[in-house]
Length: 499
Image 1 (cartoon, rainbow, N blue to C red):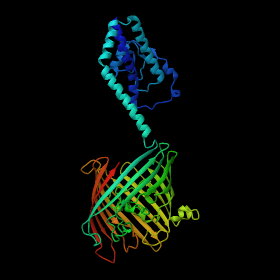
Image 2 (cartoon, rainbow, N blue to C red; image 1 turned 30 degrees about the vertical axis):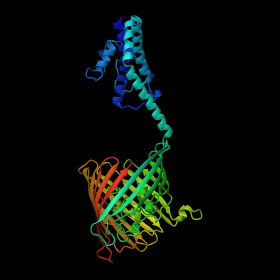
Image 3 (cartoon, helix red, strand yellow; image 1 turned 90 degrees about the horizontal axis):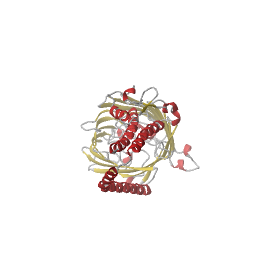
């Protein structure tokens, strides 16, 4: 009698085993959960079997064969389909689970009815309960503590819709052989806090607070580093055209926009501040944009032809195919964009961009871009319309890449051609690291006689998910006819903290 009782207890995990046998096959198949209405209700009409060999699609080599054999031959609580198949590679429906569980529960009920419950068995169960009472109490306490901690986190959480993301960049720049104004080692820093909110799971409202100071390797104008002909550092306080409010560690609202999808291929962005030029495009193509320490790593034609100040705007990104993306954006600058008597579309400084990009997971990434700005004083110190036509290219050979860009600009009083080219090695000496060298001629910014030349070699080293160190050597030549010795060579190191 005791034997039958223990068999009934063993049938409980056996019944659970039946569920595992069903659901395990579903996991292996990685099938999506369908709706109940999608199932053929005839599939629930199962047939009792007496031997696992009656299931024509179950083989001894299957990983669950022994479990099925035990459930069928020892307990008789596994049923097959009318065609004598088990269909172990498809998802388990709730109907089928109920049918299989009911069959095993019938076996348990029969065993208990036949055997009754022996007093010795009850004593054994009580002894086991007492023996593991401390462990059960500890487990119960941990669950209660976890529930209390979860309730506290929910009550005190920052927001149910907003995620706080921060980045801090610190630079040390040492002049090696430069113009006389830059004789000492300098420091520059920038800190950003991004408040990213999502209300649907696919949209994003970003509010960015930024503060910083310093932008070494300016080249030609130390008192106003943002207008230096070599354009300074990429992650410094004033490297982006039009965003100059973060100097001297004054906190400013740097980005303010809302981005949302329309259908599966179109994304719309409405900006109150902070977006222009390459901010409107999906990719700048060249891999130097981001890892490079000098701002020239991000193609500077995006900034040179943009608005002199950064105001509201709107942009769209449309995926024509899985690899071809068209981006367009409009930015209004100047104080008139924020006043009703002038308005956004009559602001003193306006710019717009269109870019068609081919982005692959393989060998070739390429793009063509057009930028136009009105009343811009950024280009060669001349106010007026500026039109820029550019091409970008990246050839990825696996472990290394070759990339660059060229940009032709027509402005009020002349034209200009700027370019960069270089190569890089991914995973150099460490996973995730990048060694890169690039150079070229920069746009003729603010009264330059010729295009400044800049060459940079950098080594981006991610130490962990929070800290990245990037040492670099930067060479710059203003190519000015006024002074042949306006040449600079700097050593720089950047530490980037993300949190």
